[in-house]
Amino acid sequence: MLDPLILLALAGVGFLAGFVDAVAGGGGMLSVPALLSVGLPPVAALATNKMQSVIGTAMAVTTYWRRGYVELKTLLPGLLLAFAGSAIGALIVSRVDTSLLNLAVPIALIAIALYFLFAPKISDADRAARLPFDKFVPLMAFVIGFYDGIFGPGTGSFFSIGFVLLFGLGLTRATGNTKALNLMSNSAALVVFIPMGHVVWPVALVMAIGQIAGGYIGARTGIRYGAKVIRPLIVVVSIAMAVKLLLWP
Image (tube, rainbow, N blue to C red; front, top):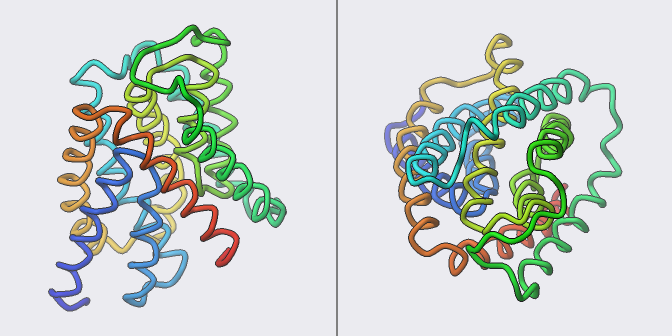
């Protein structure tokens, strides 16, 4: 059993991770190293991180949905296919060589950061979509969900750039929809992790308390300040993930 002070510190980490995740994604950069630092084995750390982050993401999605930034009925096919893609990826991950992703994903994340940094038209206003939402969002959800199942880092950034660049969503709406798809892709991994007993429940539940608060406050911050906060945070998180993957794959 972990020391109560360590559990309290992990709850704090959960809060920070939930806040960052609700605004820009990438909260796992904070929570996974924290879990490893207190002695959890890598698989247990990943499984426990998924469990606590799903709870925080659910809070963020609920907040965005209540404020009208997510239309769950329209997004439903995408939600189902994000879950299916992630589940398939998680099941076959041991049979797939992901070594190329260690280089390809950081390059993609840096490209996303540069786009959000320099594209002049990114705002909270919706624009004309390049592709039909109802036909191509499910395809995007499946492909990125599959990636989340076999590798994972940057999933939120990939969803966000897709919603903005391909489907013309304003940045706050894009973030809300991203969180919804991310919730499903992360939940699929738990279908694999929970029956195998990898989740350390006391740690997951303590961190989930922080995640609930962080997810709610982060979503409210994203809604209140919109692109002024979301845009720079996506840039910072994408670059940080790229550096982490390049230097500590």
